[in-house]
View 1 (cartoon, helix red, strand yellow):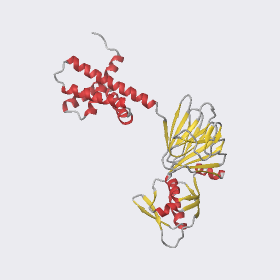
View 2 (cartoon, one colour; view 1 turned 90 degrees about the vertical axis):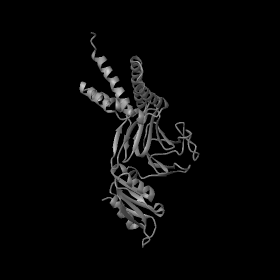
View 3 (cartoon, one colour; view 1 turned 60 degrees about the horizontal axis):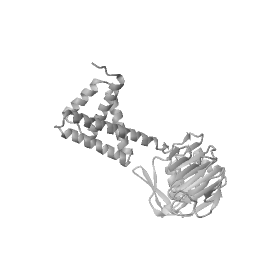
View 4 (cartoon, one colour; view 1 turned 90 degrees about the horizontal axis):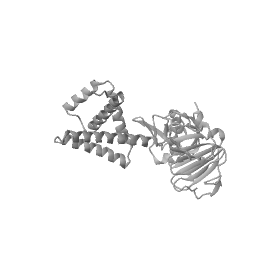
Length: 359
């Protein structure tokens, strides 16, 4: 009798786990199959873990890998299973061949899924009220504001990042041969060695430059917006942004505005403060909600058009509501965990508000 090596035994167990995985994916097991599965578990304590690994890999391919090749592999595996189950007349050799092909298909699908996942960017997230500093592979640093999602993908020739939501400040390690780009919607911020922040709001992208310089490009075309065809280190840019200036560009139109910014105000969010300077209420509420689990909602179009100035402690939604309702024609109605802001047709007027609350 030929002895089976530990490696061969493990490989056989993995193939069996793959087969059980596909059976489970095809539907509920009948009583006989359930008994067989239980006996397989009892035969070796490692079998349950091998099945868990196979199921996790199968789900990763099913839920995340939408490429036609992986979808085809999964479909073919299930079809092989159905043919094997219904082909009771099949010779044992043919049935073994079907199961072998099925296991091989799952292994290929899992391997392809692993390669696909390896090509994805790293994803960094913060929740409401959380801030986080991320050290990147090249020595750059990203400071994430609350409720932020940042994706990072480095290659030999490029350092690419995507800001899906929220705000992040970047301290970029100098590497002229590898551009550092941050995509936010259809805009692209390109830098070499500099310090800047990017913020995504509804209908807007905001870039604050602290040190160095950046180019803000139209990510759809790779060219700058038409507003100001200046060059920064050979790259076309919306505006020549100098330190302590903020660029606000619309994600809906070509409108772009650059204004000087108070350095203290520009860094206030890193110290837990929200600073509004003649800010539209809809954007102010969006920023407040970034730090709040109990959300605010604008329930009247008239509220969105009001403007507010003031300093608030991030996360202190109650102080924001008190300040706004004290000076603006707005009242707050709480219902189902959401506070709705509506126009108050009482005594207050609708002039821009100046509010200060840092308690």
